[in-house]
Image 1 (cartoon, rainbow, N blue to C red):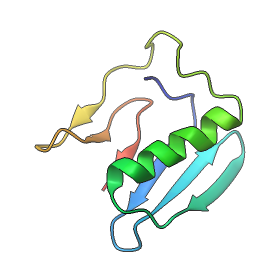
Image 2: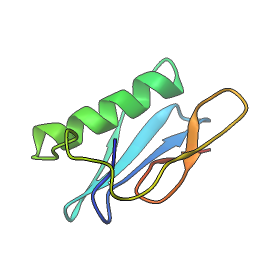
Image 3: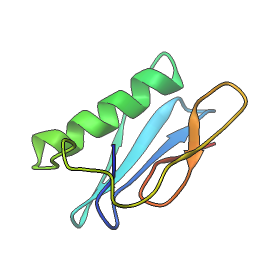
Length: 80
C-alpha cells in the first residue's frame, strides 16, 4: 500500500516502539511485541487521521529484507 509523501513509520528495535510522521504530526507509539505489530499500529494511526490506503500504488514497490519485511522504498516505511 502506498504511503503519502512525507509519511514515515520507523520501528525502533531496541525500545520496540514506532515513530510515525504523518501530515505534520510526529508521534511515538508502543512498545509492541514485534515489528509487524508496531508497523500495523503506525499505519492504523495514519488511517485514523485520514490516510486512504486503498489508493492505487503510485510511489513504487518496497524493498524487502530476507525475512520479507519492508525495509525501505519510495513511499514505504523504513524498518531497521
